[in-house]
Length: 154
Image 1 (cartoon, rainbow, N blue to C red):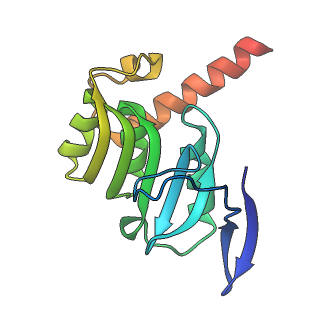
Image 2: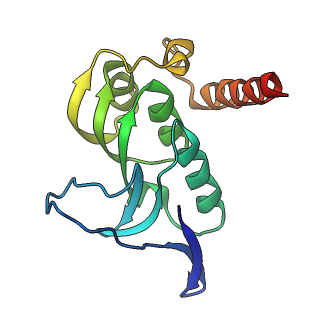
């Protein structure tokens, strides 16, 4: 999904381009993309909230300023919005944004755009966090849910 490479003494993820059939500014080649100065620096084709956790690990290895980055995500619900705000992301584009996610982004005064707004995305995690506004609490609840799902598989 992504490759770690080093350049300018900072780790970053190598962008392996896909054939781009659309020149739209919001065209996405991957499920989750991160840009710095219009240059893609991280991407993931993971599902659910996993790309955001992968991105968090990436950020821990860099000296990047999250508030200067732009995120493009195919689907942003309340959980994704809370996790992105927790990481300090201020610029966000969603292909599909839930009203609950929009509520969080507005609450934290993030700059965001979207292509389609829906009442909910039909995700249990969004239901779990329906009234949550604290990003740290949301993070803990999501990690607990991930752990519980892993335990159920054992």
